[in-house]
Amino acid sequence: TIRLDGKTALVTAAGQGIGRATALAFAEAGATVHATDVNEALLAALPKQANLIPARLDVLDENAVKACVASIGTVDILFNCAGFVHAGSILEMKDEDLDFAMDLNLRSMIRTIRAVLPGMLAQQDGAIINMSSVASSIKGVPNRFAYGVTKAAVLGLTKSVAADYVAQGIRCNAICPGTVESPSLQERMKAQGDYETARAAFIARQPMGRLGTPEEIAELAVYLAGATYTSGQAYAIDGGWTI
Ligand code: NAD
Image (tube, rainbow, N blue to C red; front, side, top):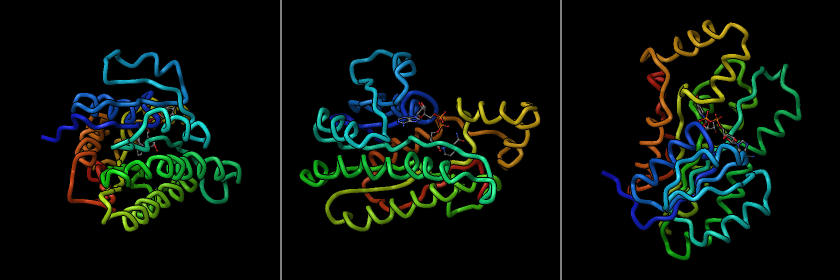
């Protein structure tokens, strides 16, 4: 069993979905967890426990990221979970949607990693976990152009950081889920008009015949937070989608 006692973790987008489940799992494993999100109402609904510290953080704001990390001190575990799913093909995509996706899904990770790396390097130890998707360079998924582009870039970022710092105690890995039950997935299903048909379609693309749960993804995040012999990898956890 992986234990994270004595470790300090920073989780982005911890207000709901996978980020929330992972913040709780890190805390359960013994870490002191700074659970951050742009949405304060969601943070207020997190369970009250001594080692789960909610804080508002908009990962689009470079100064806010720097200030957040400065207030924490050395971060041992960084989980970059913030991300947004745009619908549409290359012809349907608005340029501003791609700019936003690049900023939230990719550049936010560059901001947080730049902020935490000096502290990790000083102690020659750190685990960085980036949220990608199998909808990336692993798999082309219809109607997900901006999303697929940015989540593929997350894998490039992950491998570059891993390569630069592998001999200095830094491990940087990516999680690539299939379709996971979450509030934003619920919104995407409802937005399609016929909720039941949309839900059936999302389930149909998962060969295991069901959606994943945030808790299943959180278990992998805990493993990667503590695992000592892996870096630069894209971990698919996708209900068999990419078999
Ligand atoms: P979600 O989409 O339901 O929640 C996203 C959270 O991000 C919200 O709490 C929101 O307040 C927060 N957020 C949005 N903008 C932010 C900002 N600027 N700064 C800080 N926080 C911000 O959660 P989810 O579906 O579990 O997705 C989490 C991550 O997992 C995303 O990166 C997503 O792309 C990825 N992912 C999800 C699935 C899935 O099927 N749910 C599959 C693969 C990858």
